[in-house]
Image (cartoon, rainbow, N blue to C red; front, side, top):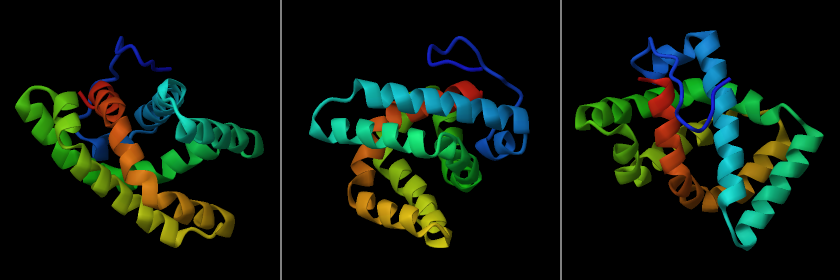
Length: 157
């Protein structure tokens, strides 16, 4: 379901908040988000990228559905942070370009919600891992913002 080539749109929703309330659309966006994440990891180069790919591969072996599960938990928290940028991007006529132009702000908004989730998490191993990765997270989110913009554009027409 979904794809990175932009060949489809599920339509029918005008905000991320609306999307997360529809289980079919929500799960389609999560599935497509995993495809985008894996494509982003595959395209990156350098030592950091190698470490990220190794960590992702290990995570998938240990907890195969953890990425989807966390996206499912985080998407409702990210929705209110994303919706103002979706509205502004639609008003500008180019949502992906708006996301690229405002990558710093959007990354802060997304990570703020993620930080809240991490503070509430019961899994101490996961919270320690997040705390260790968090200082470099903003730069990584900013690098991935073009994909985030295209993903949102496909799923929130």
